[in-house]
Length: 515
Image (cartoon, rainbow, N blue to C red):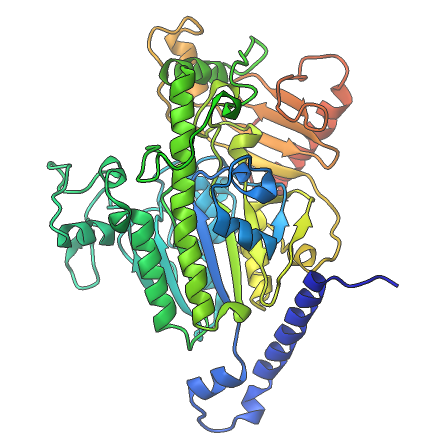
């Protein structure tokens, strides 16, 4: 007979409780005649809360459960030890706005129109709170939005705290034009003067020079704790979205993690050959000129880990507040990021490529009552993020969502593994002047290239492009993606199979790109 682990038992107990609550809610009309107050009803049928911690540009290997070499996130490490950990979680597109559009709506970037940074999420694209259809929930979004207007409540979030100013003025419901974020106003209240005098706003760089008590993570932490205090008697959905560890790679904890040469990426000296996409070769040339010196790379990585630690401390305070209020055992806690960071791998920094360091992210889910880690090795996609949360909150799948719930995996059940897909859509990029790799016309062409990626169940990864060279990697034998096998003779059957899968996927999701 199979022995049930404590983690699995906790999940079963959570499911039993949720089934009871759902049944009780359905029968409440006949049991509660007349006008019982909402507070009385909530006491009898307390619904699960949800907190989503969203970082910007965090690699998985900053956490111990993903093989971190340095202890930079003890609070997230503790959360992981009590959570279901998706070991291989992939974004839908490795840049902020498109990835966030999928995380909030359950739709592909090409479908919702957010194919590049600073695109505005359409009003007809529903976000998670709008799909819930449950007025019992109090909802809040605190932090970086990056899906259009930053400073106004929208898409079903009742409370809204912004940390990034808007690029353009926007009319409030009361008719007042607003451009400053809540964080900008907080700094003004402390007597600070905007460093961007032309726009009268505080730059991202300015915020990195401030002490922790005036930092963005501390501001977000305080507002999140206030929300928990205010809404502790009602079910809630809270998104806590940090700006860090996004560039500029700078902050008050820069000296927290001294590094040495062994901390540099193993592929930092890898030079792309002509079999690689031209856009990647241009990126490599550009990044080597900007970040090539090992001292500079070590400084950037050191500062990056300092930003991870800064965010981790704030997450620890919020989780402690959850415990103090007695809400932890009835709250689903999720942590993920919108994409990763190359951080020197292949001589590259940032995102906007399809290498594993850019497209993989941490993804933790702690269910109510869970106390042990459940490691899930099966690869998953962020396209399933919203359907999974709806499932965990006891809600039916929503027709808008392109993915499916991965709830069964969280409950210790099996699901058939599937090929995962990732997009890259045209995004204006600047490359170093005076390159010898391409003519100005060639640079303009590949700057507008699109990519569709498939990662197969058996470990193959193919990247097909509309106007640049393709890639093929065997992630099992070449996890660092150093050998592009697309033009070699042997894996032609793999190329044919995965090309067919991409084309069938494109047809099923209305993607008309020709690759």
